[in-house]
Length: 167
Length: 100
Image (tube, rainbow over all chains, first blue to last red; front, side, top):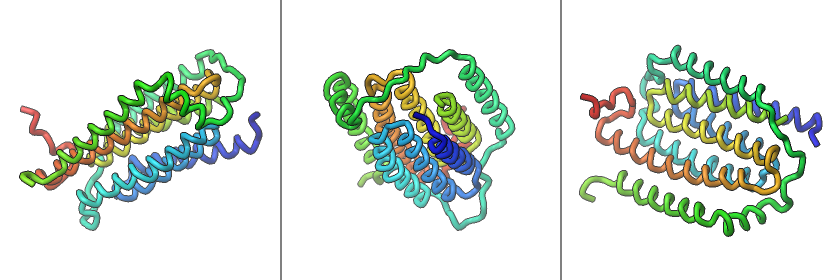
């Protein structure tokens, strides 16, 4: 049941997401855009809650807001001289990029509004994390294991790449 | 209501594409990639709720995407650190040794 309140919350969250995402891609100071990235990811977690994906919202807050953004901030602090002069952060493709994005947006929004969706009006299964865990261990056990191998490979790869030569 | 969610995801993805096309800083490009991953996740969860609510396939795939995005961020940032160590800078338009 969609009420007025949830509509209002949705528009508030999308406003936050869009404004802060624009800041992420346009701000000159890369550290500030990392902070706005955290705000965007947090608002996306709110969108998940509105879509009744509470477990996914928790995962988003833990992994994205907790881990990935800290990693990005570490990388910024290790690589960029934040106190130095304001370096130009965008290349000469800004006009072209705006055209490409506007074209993509026009095509996708147009096809969205033209498509006839077969909306099924049933609630999601109760006890969300329990159902997800059961599916992960039954039908999706192979992708689950593959993802764990991918994570292990990324871990080893990052260590091998980032260590000092000869150490 | 479904169309609003999909439109939000499309706008977020377009902003991410703009960032990938125009950022010079490699970390900035990775951040724009994260925006695009999130747009894809919003799409998956929306379709899960409105098109196929009988099971949670969309949410499970969104979890997989989050895991793969974390792995991608780790490897990408390690490469960025390596570039910084060898070049003293991470502007991607200066990194052109594979061009000849």
